[in-house]
Image: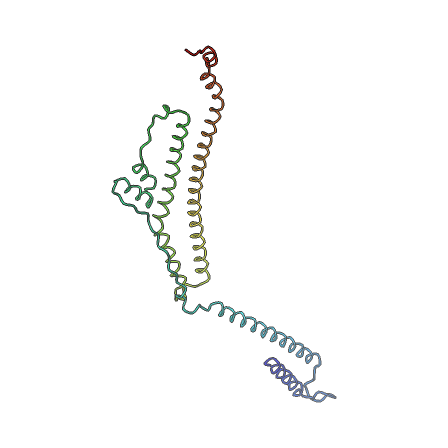
Length: 266
């Protein structure tokens, strides 16, 4: 609408300019002469100015639309505090210490002491493994493997639990900044920084979860080995029995036939 009005004003002004030019100079009278070329040039300039004006209006409308979109994107959520969540606090392992042997275990499984609390809480294993027979030697090996796997598990659990408060504080700070009412804290760069920080926290938590899964897999592998060794021992004993039965029976029945045939009633 504005463009049409401005166009009409421009055309009207041009017409007035043309009409106001003196008509003197015809037949040698006067000193001002109408120049059609100059008039055409003015009309051409007027047309160019009209096109430039249209372009300016289009640019203005585009910038206005972008500004409105930016204002819309910058709107904050109403009452962001309603998105606050209550987290479940970590619970550390605990056990009575009536025996005097569990205190270091509990400390190890809850702190960076880790496997350092494992040894004092278990029954010591003899170092004279060479005196054992084959089946017992495999049982001995299973105990050694179990000690290593359990120590690894305690290291992972102790580190995860000891770092839990620090991780939670970081998450709380990130949450507070995200739900803050201060506009300065919600620039595009700061929002992207918080998104990156949240992704890093998620990656580290996933890494801790993977470590715990590894310890479970390690314990499972140990249980599989124990089951396999037990089954192997049973099969070996069965084969040994089958192989030795004929010889044992022959030894038991040796001389029995001759003794029976030579026996006579008194």
